[in-house]
Image 1 (cartoon, rainbow, N blue to C red):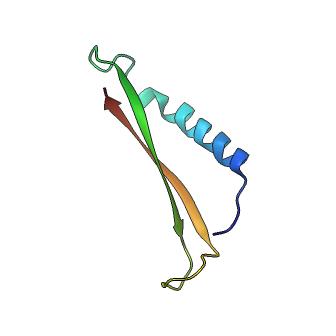
Image 2 (cartoon, rainbow, N blue to C red; image 1 turned 180 degrees about the vertical axis):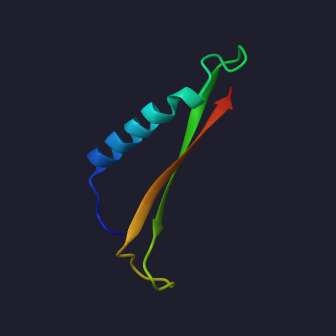
Image 3 (cartoon, rainbow, N blue to C red; image 1 turned 45 degrees about the horizontal axis):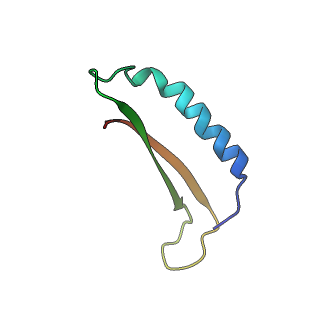
Length: 67
């Protein structure tokens, strides 16, 4: 897969959490809580098959969880 700037990815993740922080309640019904971030890195090459990817996308999904 192509190389990417890990510092830029970290900063982008931090910005995403900052943008979405209002969606997560402070006390989550008096139970301890946290948010879960699932990262995915996929190929976007126009041809499907088993080979080295040259075009990719990285995306994240956030969701609240209760402990």
